[in-house]
Image (tube, rainbow, N blue to C red):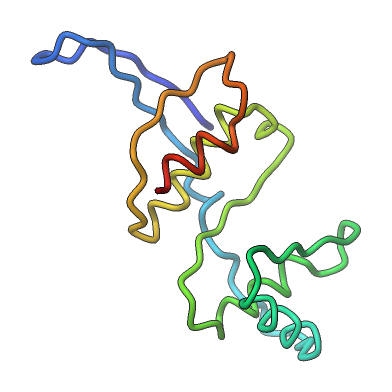
Length: 130
């Protein structure tokens, strides 16, 4: 569960928030032994490496997670994983998890302030990754 603890920093005298994250949301699911490889779809994902964004969508239970897990196992590019659920609909929570996922790649992510009145969460996330 995501929890936030606040305390006053002894040296700086400011309130510091520390978040606890569900680490399992950041793990790439392992490939199952009974996997049926979907080579045509793997090739399409590889072709998407030339673009800015590749979106995998489909109904629940149609193998999206399995497909992407298989692809990442053979992909030479570094990858971050973030499993989302209904609770991640909050922009501050989503961005906190996104930044945590990106940090698993040693991507330099500057600290940002997440406020309830944040107009554009995407702009803040993009700025943090520059």
